Picture 1 (cartoon, rainbow, N blue to C red):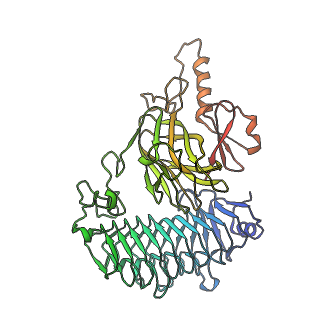
Picture 2 (picture 1 turned 90 degrees about the vertical axis):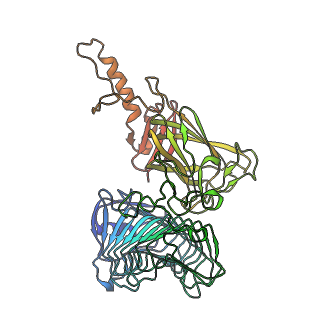
Picture 3 (picture 1 turned 90 degrees about the horizontal axis):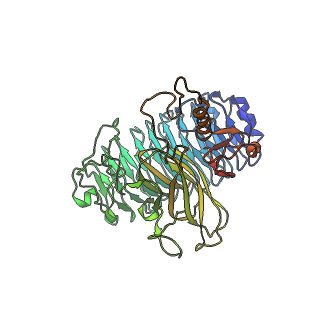
Length: 551
């Protein structure tokens, strides 16, 4: 895995890359004197700190700003991954996907101060843009969108934010069949038509827009922009736009949406179900209308939008959360061995099905084959610590499938091996750290499918002192919390210290090369991080089990 520390080294590594290579860029500001053009398939270019969008020490790719030099990053082949970079000062586009590529992923980027579009899927299909910012792109007012989905098909924009761009926040223009989920757009323009512009006259459209928010705009919040192709907008919130929703010319579908003041312009033929304007809800009753508040545009207790949606769901993008962190799905208490059935999870584009036999409970979750399909269990955890998990699943398709498993703020890859049929159920095991109190456990796709999941069993790992789900915290808040300190004058002082070494083996990961794995004792609960591949293993007392990979 080549590691680079300058713009010239990064350009050279990309020029010489072979399929399957991963290029790791150390933090710093990289001045690029020409375009970073990736023309090799199956290559990953990753910033060393790629946790998210400009947080911590970053790798900043900075252009000269000269308009004639074109875009800064161009991804032109299949299955390229570009993650974790700050990109700015491009003389044209910030990041563009081009060349009829398929399956490109752009994640954890912060793109700003470019001449035109921040992030653009300019051709190809099935790209994923996720967990990214695009803002303050203002050089050419007529074309400086935050995110643009022109001339591409079936792409996913997941948890992306656009603000202060000179044109639209999200402009799907001639793109088709895109999915926009959990995206935010505000304060774009003055050249724009809408925060979410979802088509063009004579083309584009066919998009699915879910759980998105448009606010604080002189323009339309969500707009069909004259496309004749139907668009589905579901569980979205618009506040202080002009108007909030405008859809004409086709049989669009609008469900479970909130217009804060019922500012809409809709022609006959639009399928409208359980929106605030249909239900006569004049005041959604938000926790806050201050954009700086954590409760901004989230439903407050007593809101008439709670439970008013189809199938009893809440309206809008941000459902009500009670004082204990609960929401539309009741919290599941984790105390001792606990089973989490798929039927009790919150599901996003992941229906509960019963077609294939052999499942437990009411059914199994069948993930759709796109990014963002998810099941999430809201939990109330009695004791913090490590838990063994068993995911019960079936996978009758071809090829192993990779998804993301998250626990609170942590996440990692999990792989679903084939089981030889959709009625052949197996278990996927590993360990996960859970904090005490309210948290969430989830499985989410990132562009691939996953196995059919009917349940997860959590089992707390006992510590040496007999406690489970994490050691009992001592009353003092010292740096030695959780370890034994011999009393003065003890003659057997080595006994508590030996217990400390056991605890260190459990609490502190082993970091070494992949090839050195078997040289270490696979003590139960011990984590091993392969520094050269990023693979994470956990010991079960007899051997090492692959847990996932660092993101």
